[in-house]
Image (tube, rainbow, N blue to C red):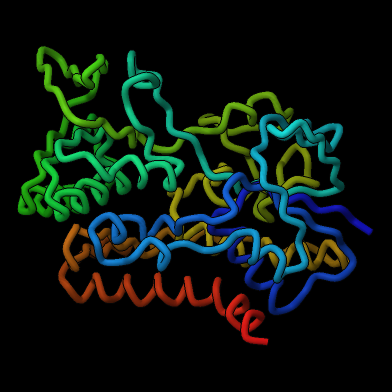
Length: 353
């Protein structure tokens, strides 16, 4: 019987587990390693901060979902991976051996700016972020990408004073202009072209000759690879993520899949794409057990992006088209609620049986 190790409970693996709960995968023994037994769905995090959702509405039970899929849950964090020996080392001292593995451990936040590691709060993990944000009223956010601007407008909606430092935009120019205008209309102090050069105790943000003190500084500078990937023996892309083929398998070690932020695919790292990875991963794991050829993942350059704007208002972007309004928020609301319903449906059915 093949041993399959799932590392992390991101969007792709959550989608996989929900599918396996409905249609089990026979012929394999599977284990999931993830540090948090309950996890917040990232797309709903700004809504929780803004007060549109209760935390429990945006949270799913990783351990219970794994159990419903007949997958062993291991509450630990991976600290090293040896692709050649097919071994994962965990922070609880265990060495886990596998025949095949799938990496969906998300990404890290690079805090390489002087003082950032000591005096800022990384936006990941989200569970820790929510706990720390309860008491702040004057916030700086380093990073003007999707995560940074959504958090900024959510905190502003809650009543906090928010400043966003954005060295460079992570959006195409037309969308970047729309996002900047939306943030300013809501009272966010948006500072495009200003990078954070250092952070001192206080915390005090230094940007060029400017110095400003805040209650808290959130670090949302964009995805960075987990350090253990560099020592794994896997072939990585220029950014340090796992280079994969069209089947989502590593180009150097085909017994390891990489999905979500872990994968180097040359496409934007987003929840929408990660869920699509999960569908391909599910099929390829089933094909693995039956000995049939793998299917290929087809990137979608026009994948939908929906950015929330604090209030029940959102910006929609697909390809070169963009629009905004309350309707876009309700569109996102319907998508997110449907996703959470899929994750929780099997658990509710089992609880009532």
